Figure 1 (cartoon, rainbow, N blue to C red):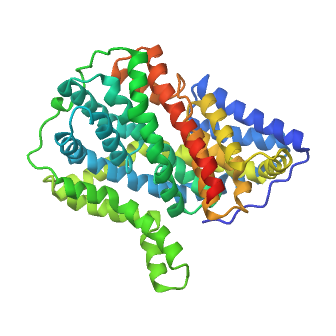
Figure 2 (figure 1 turned 45 degrees about the vertical axis):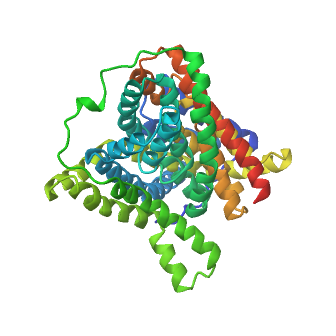
Amino acid sequence: MAAAPPALPHTGSNTQLLIAVLLAIGAIVLLITRLKLHPFLALTLGSGLLAAVAGAPFDKLLASFSTGFGSTVASVGLLIGLGAMLGKLLADSGGANIIADTVLSRTGAKALPWAMALIAAVLGLPLFFEVGVVLLIPIVLLVARRGDVPLMRVGIPALAGLSVLHGLVPPHPGPLVAIDALKADLGVTLALGLLIAVPTLIIAGPLFARVAERWVGPLEIPTAVTPEDTVEQERTPSFGAVMATILLPVVLMLGKALADVVIDDPKATGQRVFDFIGSPLIALLAATLLAMLTLGRAAGFDKGRISDTVGKALGPIAGIVFIVGAGGGFKQTLIDVGVGDMVSHWSAEWHISALLLGWLIAVLIRLATGSATVATITAAGIVSPLAATMSSTHSALLVLAIGAGSLFFSHVNDAGFWLVKEYFGMSVGQTLKSWSVMETVISVVAIALILPLSLVI
């Protein structure tokens, strides 16, 4: 990893820096929402505008942006790639359907919303949100039809399960980027993320589903996309094998976090072993290699088919990697022009909680751009200096606060909004009453749990 460049010199005051930040973020928002420019290009141009208005020389800007881009892709890009491979193997082998079928076969009608939330949470661990939606929604439609239950009653818990995991729990891109930017401990963040995710999912999923059901009214269940449209596979992996594969990286990363607490000696052999196997790269690599056997071979795939499946997983995530990398460049530019120091100064003067500040910044950028990832990256870059003096638990909670803010009120500028609308066959108004409010409930409940937790631990 390249060394960090020297801080970019700026000639202006804090007022000039504030104007530079507002103009840069405003330009990014305008480029993404109005001109429909790709977020990678928008973030790159926004970084240039930020440095120019702040009075930084362009040769220093180039070094700063390149360093941020490279370090972010090096730390997060590999994990995104491995997560995509694992998700593709899970989808193509029929592992996702195995989980759904097994849980639903043992669930009564009243427990269906809770079962769908559980299925979505388990599937949401290794999958990107969009991939999870594509995999899960057909199952939701089939369950609603077979179980003769309102679509919202099972749909909202499924969407909440995916969204909560996407915003709060690594190895999803948003939390990983924030962990990297804030130098937080991944194991601690994972443990606290799961702790916050469970009650958040219960409230925003099965409980809110009953409210959404009344607000939206009866929906006709779309018939265009169901698992019945797909060809049945002769062989599928077992439920136990699928669960073991999905949970392996989580167990390894939590094991590392536990070893850090119990052993607490960096030179001890046991801790060094856990530090190695519990690192996100090794944990996800181990799960991906295991998936080739427990999912790919178990489904009857030959070596060529497994290689083809893994290879096809990388194409769709290239855009995500570049967006995340450009976000890292923008974050580094924010830090190097002195924005972080400015925010630290104002935070101390105004006595604003760093957790609340991170949440609010992420909320504003989410509302403006519609992108949870852009909101997370930008907010993490702005508040990163505040994490320098924090304990590992509080820096992890700051990651979660930013992740919670990045989920706030998805609306018409978010691709996920339209994905949900079309899959469920809802109007824009119905989607706002259900999906958009659900995202807001997740965001508000999560920060409401994070703030008091920060006073206890």
